Amino acid sequence: MLFTVENTSAYCYTGGKAIHPEQPTAVFIHGAQNDHSAWALQTRYFAHHGWNVLAVDLPGHGRSQGAAKTSVEALASWLLAVLDAAGVAQAMLIGHSMGSLIALEAAFQAPQRVSHLALLGSSYPMKVSPALLETARNDEPAAIDMVNLWSHSSIAQKPSFPGPGFYAMGGARRLKQRISAINPQHIFYTDFYACNAYANGEVAAATVRCPTLFIIGARDMMTPPKSTKLLTSTIAHGKLVMVDSGHELMAEQPDAVLDALFSFAKP
Image (tube, rainbow, N blue to C red; front, top):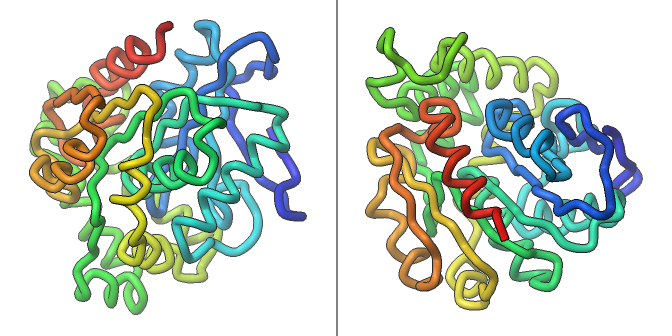
């Protein structure tokens, strides 16, 4: 579904369903150098089980037009404008990695718009090493390969990989390469820069009052479990679920992530 947001086309995947005002809405927010398809194994289930789904392509990613935004604050404001364009007064926000910071900041900017908050593969501060930032700016293909390797645990390589019908590491790599092909304007660097520069996370977390869920990958090397402590201690009422995966937990452990999200979403 296409909306006009800030005078530019914004795409949201809806699971093939129309938006029904009487149903609750779940908004899925992808991470750096990704698009809505990162949530393919969760969004369709929500859409066919009583929920409106808006899985966004952030500006400059996937089918959304415009330049990639350089700050988490600007991305959160854009996300709230998407809700306005879709006619959604309140939603559950579900964000992965960079998307988790966007969800957190949106809850800070407009707490009345957020019914539930789910943060996956999240940490604060979400610092990016200078070497990776430099590689993302000057050699994006190398940065894609580096991050793709670090984002997956060894289980992603095994024949017993739990995501049926596809190869997690290969799929994630091709998606990041496709984003580069669609928009060659150093998207990876821009996304990493926004994560690295975001400085409002602790303040935002201290204001969260809505039900909150943390889903953490036990093998995550990008946002290790120990890096979540500031957020989980500040949002002390949040529920924490640990899954046996790396950073790409929606693909590595799709059923466990879906079960945690859908159980959390129930009234």
